[in-house]
Image: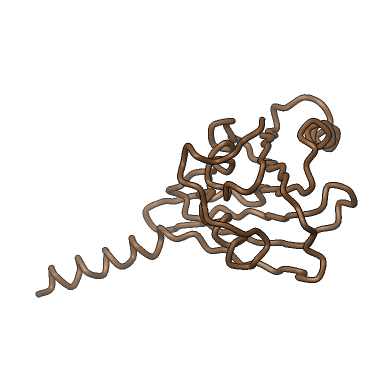
Length: 171
């Protein structure tokens, strides 16, 4: 019985620590009509493949471009974003930025934390913001589906999440 109890506690703890928490705020009256989205990641280890995961899961009724910025990127990040907005003719920009590195050890579990926002490309005015916390087991890559699901729940975007290969990426 004691072994079963320990197993149950460990199972519950593992399932709880595998979570991604998203807290968001939306300015509903400021949401523009848009079809073209630029997704920008500002992470230490963001691969282009990871950023493309956002494009693959975004609803099909949107055209999605991506830009992965790292500390190793040359040039001015704001200028790179402006260039990509112009190339993709993006209406809005979704930015994911790492603000706290997570770590996991035998006794502690500090989550990774990200600031996420969506703003108009023309004015730079944000209309959706989120704070995302994820388990260190994900590394520096929060699952794109967790952010896209929240955008859908907050009625910022419409449609259904695409399944893998069928999404519209225009990079």
